[in-house]
Length: 360
Image 1 (spheres, rainbow, N blue to C red):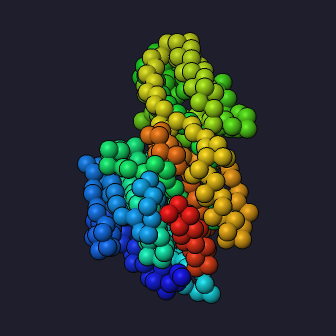
Image 2 (cartoon, rainbow, N blue to C red):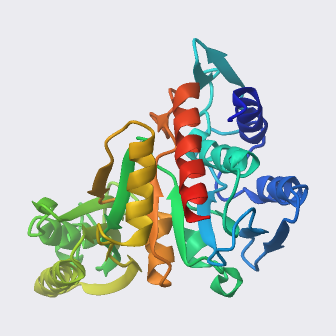
Image 3 (cartoon, rainbow, N blue to C red):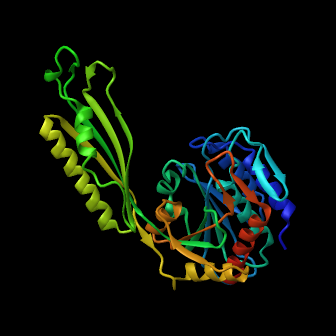
């Protein structure tokens, strides 16, 4: 049976430890000591600072390890969090985020380990620096990971089972023109900002189709009002659940910037990186079926979906570890209104218990 007070106390303990990204090392160190006190647990920190905890099987002959992953870092403002509970809802005092994203998930995993009557070998994977681009899971030493399948606890709804995510391509475009006085000799200059504007006006942006989006998020350029700007930078992203579509759209954008820059005599340099690769888990895969059944056992209809956001599951799947994303129960994350109901934490924990006990 879940010990609700212990679950809440563990969560409160975790959120009071600051871990604003990328400064999450102290919280990782705390978790290392915390998990080390569990019977039979062995902890290991990799070169990037990610924590891998190995818990031996309990009442099970199943030798296949199942993983549970969360991230240690939070967004800002996350220093001096004072969690308060009222009418069964936990919030911060209002000056900070709460940090339920993703410390509720970690607390729920802890309670699952303490309450499950039986389970196969379990691996708890706590990664750093997820909020700024899944850097922890990108740099995880996968030689330390034994999991045959895994779950990332890092979304809102407790009945959701996320089975797919997008290819994510970023482009940083650097345009170099020629400086000149904007009043005395504008014809001697080449405006890098004009080059950027000409290109951006031709890009396909927003929702391209039901599985593809793109966005210009940042434009930087110029130094003074009365100078023809020599330099401009444009930061772009492309997402698609179809990898070929994502890269085709990125190719199209590169060509537009090259052509527009050439037309005005500017130079262009484009740095492009595929940060995440699209994945999709079939509904009949074990990792999905086990999660869906666990949701049903808690009197809910499982909502099996794909999303356009990147998660640590993308990287785990890329390393041949079938991984679905489950809900921790928080709401309005990344804001000072972030909250989580105690009942939602209980439900999330019960789902995790059902998963490991069924796998035992």
